[in-house]
Length: 140
Image (cartoon, rainbow, N blue to C red; front, side, top):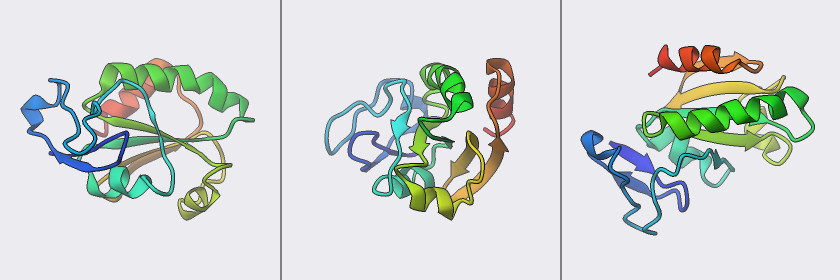
């Protein structure tokens, strides 16, 4: 399975049965999974969303958004509990306006699941934890 490094965005081939064994990046030697969402930018987005084979769950958010702030702990906890089955990333729509426009983000938070360049699911609005986990389990 191809997995993008959260540190340098290099693609790493990791056998699926080894995903839970704390693999490290072949290029920078950082852990491929650290249980925290990665910050997505124009420079690393394609590696995680288009090339990697691991589903990428993206939280499109902004610092001034109240619902975004209240959903952040749920999203962080999901990253901690559900990696390496999913990769979790946060995209600040204020700092990454071009990427937000590319995906027609009109309201935040907006959640999307990408896999190899395709959008598997999209949802506007924050979820309670149980509903978020259920939504994710429907899109593995």
